[in-house]
Image (cartoon, rainbow, N blue to C red; front, side, top):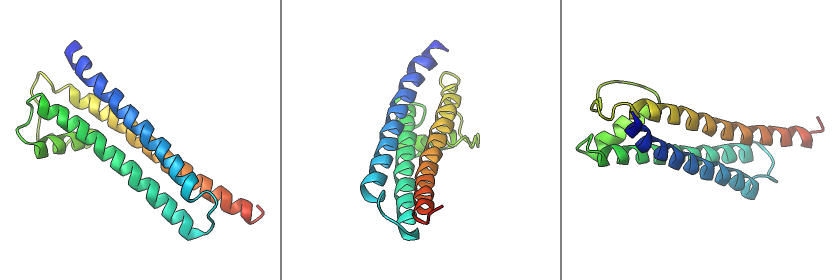
Length: 142
């Protein structure tokens, strides 16, 4: 069990760092490109940009976990490792591919990591949407 945490916790920390970077990039992207923009198109483009950034961030995190699984020898192909990682990260839990007893507890660690990071991604998107709606209401005098 200790070995699982010694391997899993550093990956979670790397993913938290990646998500933090993506979140900061999202805020900077919004401020640089859309903070002063008005209208529905600006809101759509801002939200689309943020969704794209957070999706790329989440896919990168899935890749980090998949690379770990491949490195540990749990899977013979990167495709299989990434697939298993995506199922864990998204908390789907298909169960069609199962890791060995030695490493299978990494699955729940990745699921917790994924749930937190996807939640943070949603919060980032919602923040941009709220900022845009607030700006539109302020401009209309509400």
